[in-house]
Amino acid sequence: MATSITERSWCVVIPHDPQGAGIARHRIQTDLVPLVQPEMLADVISVVAELIGNAIRHARPLAGGVVRVAWAVRYAGGDQIVDVRVTDGGGESVPHRRLLEVDAPDGRGIAIIEALAARWGTDQDGFGQSVWAELTCSMHPAANR
Image 1 (cartoon, helix red, strand yellow):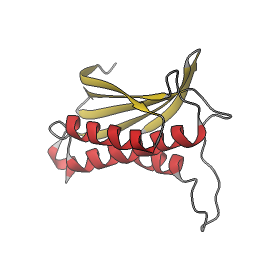
Image 2 (cartoon, one colour):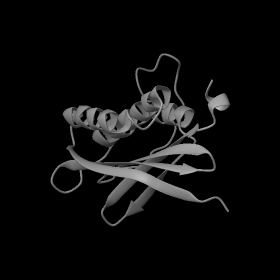
Image 3 (cartoon, helix red, strand yellow):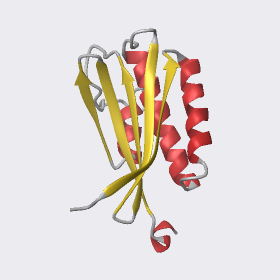
Image 4 (cartoon, helix red, strand yellow):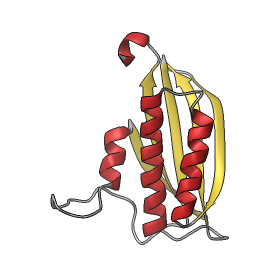
């Protein structure tokens, strides 16, 4: 059985609007730049941007007109793992990958998340819906070249 230890974790509450997404991206970059490799940081920010964008476009806000964004860095089996979670008030449907025409102007958020994250999923409780993703980077130098 692999053991994982959370090194650091953060949570921020942002407005349920596009400006909130910018606040979260800036905060995540500031917090993670000393901890993760630049390539992984770019992927984390891309995934969080998609998760927040989906929450703003497709879901209701939490009480107070906000969305909660949380992230954590942990280590397991020689890998660095960044967990991200965006919690909103839920929407009409559970997030899922859409089949799109090549020239569709939008709708690729979940496909982007699937491409960048090792895993992703949703959780629902009495307060709202969380969409989470787990991004992994090997801590072995040879694997990162």
